[in-house]
Image 1 (cartoon, rainbow, N blue to C red):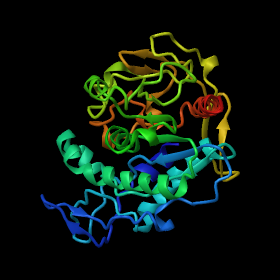
Image 2 (tube, one colour; image 1 turned 180 degrees about the horizontal axis):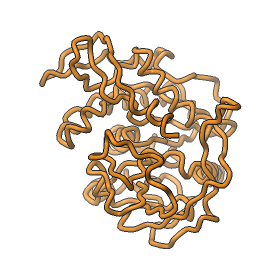
Image 3 (tube, rainbow, N blue to C red; image 1 turned 60 degrees about the horizontal axis):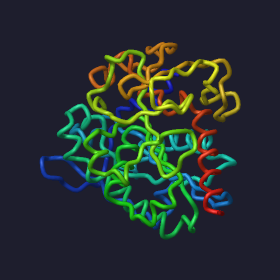
Length: 336
């Protein structure tokens, strides 16, 4: 598992990119054209009542150009960057969407781990590019691909961050009224944001409310918060769908989904369970060995005890069942 994690998340890639200059010496790859199917993951004819619009997490780590200069953005026209994104998109399509939802996932110019390592000010200064790409992708999706269907937003880490921005600044009320729920895993919404955007950022309060945000960050140690996500005021327990400190037992954990090399598919893994409880808006998992997802290279951002790299699959079966439940509640309400 650790080897697979590093293959996807810790690639150090020499990239040859046709890039424009950004103030401060950074480089910006060409913008994706979302009218071109090349910039979407496996577009297919929709045959389900509800869509998933998915935005993948950081798969660009510290890519460099031909001169060894660090690039601050991934270039999705580069094969290896695209392969890293595809591995993540495929997991989410098979784990959550297959046979249940239509799946739409754009490629975008995300900031690399080099920017995150430079600190929160650098992240904020460079985030307009990925935010803008996802706003344009969502606009294209709504106008040309959605067909009037309800949709779920799904993201992890940087993907969740840009979707939070979309909810705050890039989605009309008419479009938001068609959102079943937003599963924004592994990022934070602060108390200040909740106060400023009460109608746009509504945390889930239970298992089947709609138009809401499902968000959590998992830790084995409350002291292992990431400095990137250390002020979250939103958390729901994906095992018992409570927002208070009521603990969920291992028996309530429905299972994980991981890659099976024998079948080349993503399958449920039996017997891998954990309990969880909320403590100060963070999800504490006492039964997980934090070394399973620890990356020494990023110990300053994700210290030992932080389960950020597991958040998208650790509760996968519970999340999948909940997506179906909320979608059924939304569709039932719309028919009344």
